[in-house]
Image (cartoon, rainbow, N blue to C red; front, side):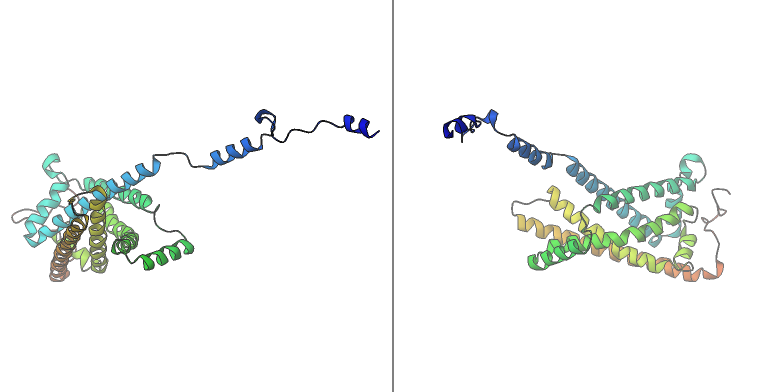
Length: 280
């Protein structure tokens, strides 16, 4: 009976069964691991490139805008002529303020796109901010603190810049010596412009510095020497444009105070009639 019972039982599988006869659990586990591994993608690199390019374009626009508004320091006539140049009067026969609105709207769109691209790297939530803060304190590295200052100034810059761009989109015809000075002083916009000046120059200076490091601009065989050179350039850049911006803002405030009793008056070149809304 014992022998019959042994033969009735199904033969046991050998300890080292062939791979084809084993359960497919290992294969299923392998597929799960492979499926959960991130695939190689160029998307992060492309987004990084777009962020760098949009930031560089915005920095160049900032420099151009600063030089444009600073023409008031040379003469009222020069500032007026440059403003009318951007309105296409030399091309269409008379100023077209709508061109300024279109350009300002385009800059606004570029600003929003750049902010969206930059938000990918900013810590989201208390835990991430706490982890980054602890990392920054332990590391004690200057460029890490610069990145945090760049991120915070960029956050503030987004709101300050949109206020200024809204004026350019909605009231492009009010760009001139008297009109701009009245907006700065009588309109009470000078605190906004003062905050915008420091925020934009700090953010732009750090951004250009970090771009130069990333792409190897002004590179040197000695990495530390090249980094020190870039820091000096950044400090000189920020000092120059902050000083220029302060002097320019004071000029607009002074003109606005002197012109406060003639609110609404439009500037005209000597010997010409004032032009309003693109019409004589």
